[in-house]
Image (cartoon, rainbow, N blue to C red; front, side, top):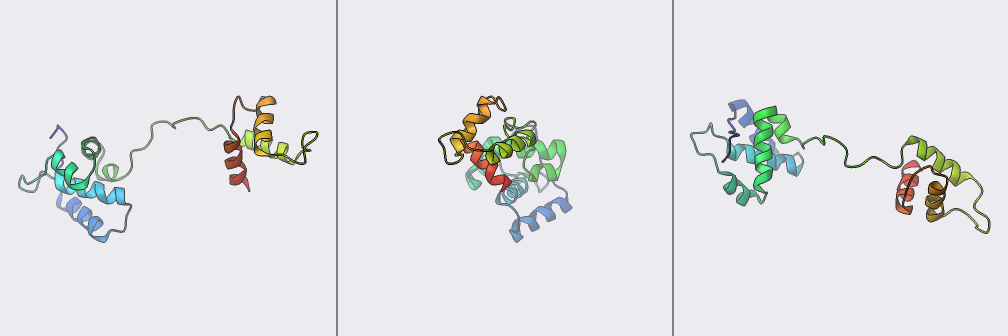
Length: 148
C-alpha cells in the first residue's frame, strides 16, 4: 500500500461523494475523488489497495501513489487538482519581442522575386536576422494565428 495513508474526515468524504455523484467536474478530478474515497482508511479498514483501485478505474498505480502523496502532504485540493509543473517544459521561442519583429517583418516588402511572404520565408528570415536561433514555419504559423 505505501506509507501515504489516506484518512478522510466526514466533511472531506461528503465533499468527494458530492463531487463524484454530480459529475460536474473534469473527468480527471472525479477520478481523483473516486481514488481518495476508495483509499480512505478511516472507514473501518475497508480501504482498497492500490492494485484494486488501479484495476477498477484503469489508472496506473503511480498515479494513485501521487494522489495519496499530495493528499497527505498538501491536502485535499492538491490531491484533486493537477500537479503544477515545477518548470515549463521548454522556453517559448516566440515571446513579445519576437512577435513584434515578426509582425514588422510580415508587414515589410516581400523578398525580391516574391509576391508576398510565406511561412517558410518568414521563418528563414527570422533566423537570418538572428532574431531567433532556429524556428519552424509551423511555429511562425501558430504565432501569427495567435496575433490575428
